[in-house]
Length: 502
Figure 1: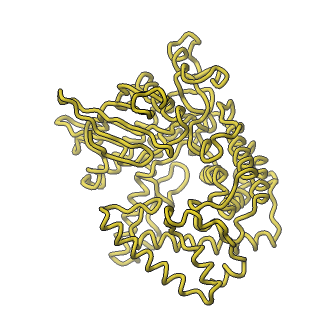
Figure 2: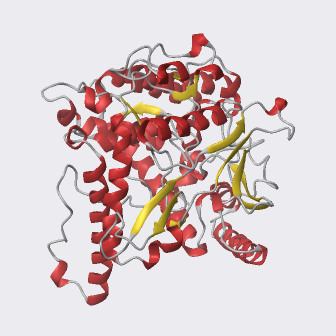
Figure 3: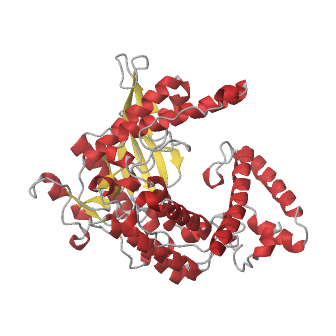
């Protein structure tokens, strides 16, 4: 038994005396709600294997009730995925084959759109969900006597944000929902209830959370009410754009396994490579198509043109020097790969939808206004205001801005961007991953930690006086979550003038 990974789950490779191997996964408390997280993942895997023959390792044994297991924990025992990780071979693929793989992966994901679900929520075995929490139907067009209806159901959403912190014990609407409007309204109501009862600044909040303009409790609740008034308009009328769909929640190169074969593979005649398994379906849910259908991080790029048009090189490309051309060409090819995935995976109605990315961004931020502050959420609302004519032609947006409000928003957003760019620059300087993750051994960790501490001291010392230095210490983006867990108790936030003159 060898531990091979630890993040939201502790993952072990098991080797048996007969030479067989299996994977054991134990979800941590960070993975999501007890019982629901494991029960939904297992049911989702089984459903996709039965209904679509989707390439997922089979579950051999599992238990979502920790108190009933000999090991005292929830677990999933499953087949070991065949082949090798895409992350181990992607760098060796010629650029053309990487593009072909984007198309193949998109075609694989598009199979999920064959499932015509009737409600929004998470998938479960019926036996794992009380009858009052089950949606009355599962799929469009199948008989009530169909075997799938007797085994599976759509139940409450198991997505982590609906259970995080005190939300897990709150009486909030977790679905299943019959309409996309019901789901989006539930997101806002959930956050309003939590903010009203429990919100305090936390060590794990975004570093820019304490900037001026990020809002009081009442500000957050009020702006989420504005969001709820827009929900009926933000949800598209066209069924194909809003219908319930399932989509892999975290499709990156370490969740995809591939195999080489002597025969022609599915990627390219010159590269006999085939997708053998797609793993990690934890947190999968059934949501509105216009929110769910997104390009995975593996191929996602900014600056990709909307619709079905392919990216083009900039008009001044020939005027660039050789090194600039190489950089622009690399980004251009990655944008083409992004578009190839879209063209293979998304149905035409999704391409025809106006301001889709702006709607996605707004709904994403509605889930986390307290954690990240109101500035990005206010900007997302403003972008919807700017694009209102595209969303509802010849109508007036119910959200209006005075010139004073626009000046205020611009000033706060400019300051927020400045500090955001500082964080991104530091991440690149120290080669830090998400949540400050450092690749390498303990020695490398200590080396980077000391370098970060030195940079922090230099940043603080640049303050013009003691008060400016105090504010800079608060705005420093990295925190030691073990040592500084009480940094916000008490916390005197910087005033507008203090933060502005840093």
